[in-house]
Length: 310
Ligand SMILES: Nc1ncnc2c1ncn2[C@@H]1O[C@H](COP(=O)(O)OP(=O)(O)OP(=O)(O)O)[C@@H](O)[C@H]1O
Ligand SMILES: [Mg+2]
Image (tube, rainbow, N blue to C red):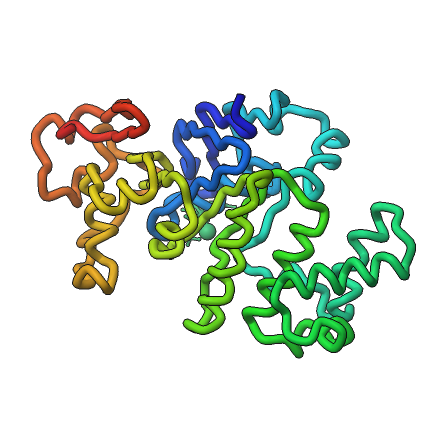
């Protein structure tokens, strides 16, 4: 049985302009020890999927579908049961980690607090916090622990939030854009850190990222999102080397190492999705069928593609 089994996840937002259909019929599984990457352009629904699993979305969100974690549905279980899972068994590293740190609390205390809440003594919690910071490759943990978040570099702050999220050894980590906004040196250290995490056979990860190189290095499988739906999913290396969906091919061609060829056009409005293929208007292989019939995800072994051409 998979550790996480998401089926037919739909997320809409009620807005003054109408219903924004941010996630459409998304299904995937993550096994113990596996890392699944969610990739796609800005606004494709990556963060909304991550947050919906832990019910962190605002009140105007309407979430449908199932998300079974070890056999229990995260989307319908009682709030008090979810509280036992959130943070302890599934942790979330948010897209903007700095905003989740308390600027008035010393770094070490922000980590040790997690252990204190679990009933550890102050002294032992502080010792555990220092160990966590050392593992996170934070320079001079003893000194950094006594400083405030603004006194750390962006990369160290990012790793500190990751440390808080990981201190209780969760079985599943949802990491949202862990390399966003980092310079190349800090990015390198963060990748090293995530590689180390990925190597842990007891831990599964849902890695949400724009950073295709990171996804290639760390993920076992990738799911490509377009306008809130999965258009392709398969083993990471093969999918990046031989993508089959025209959108994935466009994304990969837009990488600097592949010539930086931009993907023309924009994704459709989530307020009014087209009846045919959502990518149709931007696709150079567009045919008549693509405008009138919405393609279904087709399975081919470990690979899934949503395209009339395949
Ligand atoms: N509270 C909300 N109300 C209305 N629409 C929302 C809300 N939150 C998200 N959305 C919409 O849902 C869509 C998906 O958003 P999401 O943040 O998941 O994108 P993303 O793929 O994570 O993008 P990025 O790569 O920029 O982080 C966007 O079009 C966004 O405008
Ligand atoms: Mg996001």
